[in-house]
Amino acid sequence: MINTLNDIKVSDCAVSGTHGIGVLMANSMMFQRFPNHDGYDDPSFSSFYGQTLPLMKDGIPVEIVHMENLPFKQTLADVKVLIMSYSNMKPMEERYHQMLVDWVKNGGALIYCGEDIDPYQQVPEWWNKSPYAYHSPSEHLFELAGLDRKPAAGKYTVGKGKIQVIRRDPKYFALEPDGNKVFKECVYSLYKEVSGEKVELKNNFVVQRGAYVIAVVLDESISSKPVQIKGLYIDLFDKDLPVISQKKINPGEQAYLYDLRKITEKSKAHVLCGASRISDERLGEKEYSFIAKSPLNTTNVSRVYLPSVPKEVMINGEHFDWKSNWDKKSSTLLVRFENNPDGVEVNVKW
Image 1 (cartoon, rainbow, N blue to C red):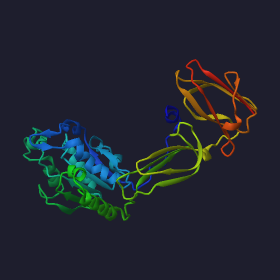
Image 2 (cartoon, rainbow, N blue to C red; image 1 turned 90 degrees about the vertical axis):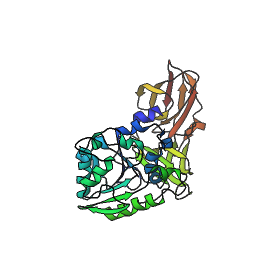
Image 3 (cartoon, rainbow, N blue to C red; image 1 turned 135 degrees about the horizontal axis):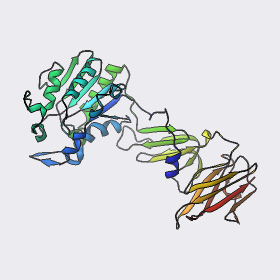
């Protein structure tokens, strides 16, 4: 896994699904981790997860938007619908509200969830100190937007954009059966209204970064169907690193695959994946060697790409049975040996 993380490249490829739905988060969220205070509880950080997990379970790659980053214009540049609540956090600076209102007036859509009844609403802060006397920070936000300080649940037009108010603490979206139904309906409806597109609902996420394919199929989602990925891959989550032509991923399972079709240097032998650090690589006209180092009492399983069928494989000077470990369709050799921190020498001739 460490080798793959060193090898994986930054990619323009995005995680599959509808983008442009974000959840606002502030540093002050950590101040409210106390789950039960003055008669109000938020078990297991449910006010945050209530805004995020219902959407993720529908296959939406929800984006986290940091309130402290709102001064940077690019923070909301790709966000179409922004979800927020002051049930689990508070704004540390009043200027953030003006930035949110300006974004809405320019066509953004804001969904505010909350009853504003938690005891942290009354902590001595800027919204209840002179010159202000608000009972909650959201009153300042709504007033800036030209709404009542405590607007009822509903949808309001603000400039070119919309503000949707849901008078329910988001913790209930996670804690109650079907508690997120109205929340999701509001998000999906508002997204279509501002973007003109339907939200794509699915039970999986898939992304390809270079040669690596990462996929997950969700449980508790809109479907219990597995996802089938077809091609030519090394299964990196299988300790034997098999070459497979298809991978079936069931709900609750993940896959991490090396796409063998992405090999570009087909004339050059190289280690594709394995459980050791590779060094001292030497590449001849028809020969390839390297040193593999890893801790004692661990087994190395590596898959090596070769431009041709091997004729001889030596591991620390001993012959290795390459015939039963050669995969013709992928042109890869599976080598297996006990690791040594001092190094194990592998030499291949073809």
